Length: 255
Image (cartoon, rainbow, N blue to C red; front, side, top):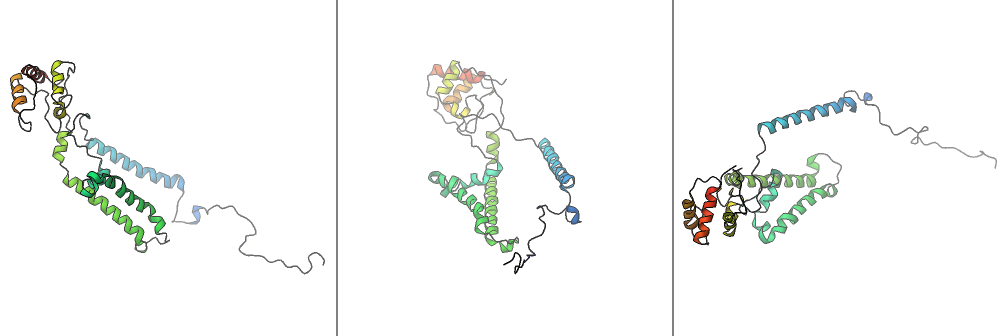
């Protein structure tokens, strides 16, 4: 058999005769539907970002951050409040089935299941449709998550005691305290620190003892007989210790 005799060559139209690089068409071939990334599109993005940045800066100037007093680890009556984007989890821990002995359920298991379900939504519903009506599983899970977050956040804001929170976080006058003095030692021994703080600035459980304007005799009377939310009989020391303590508290003034 001679070379080429009886042989036929068949061509496939799906295979291009000339291989071309995988480069998309130029945007100019789609008039009115696209634009150059640089500088047209990127410039628009920068302008929008600049508007939001300037607006945010104006907002921070008009409404400064609500700073509170310096954190006091000895103030056991202080109730911290998380930032707004964690309020829904904060509210969740108030319910019986997610608090107390069930804190692990409310803090880890329930949020883990919720966020895990949202992460798995694209793998559970893998349909190519883009209309929400044709993606019931993914859309339903997302709407459920958003609704639960909004409801819990709203409940947290509505049920929180904002007046007490503002009072416990109020910046109060500070005083220069001699923590080596005998009066301060008695102050700590009589557990006054638990309500009035180690700097005597007060807290949610007790008022500030800075600049009280009370005489040593008046301070001693309150320490023995109590006043307001402070019951009588808290002071357990001797008369000499009471005198030293009352003179110390009466002498505490702001800087």
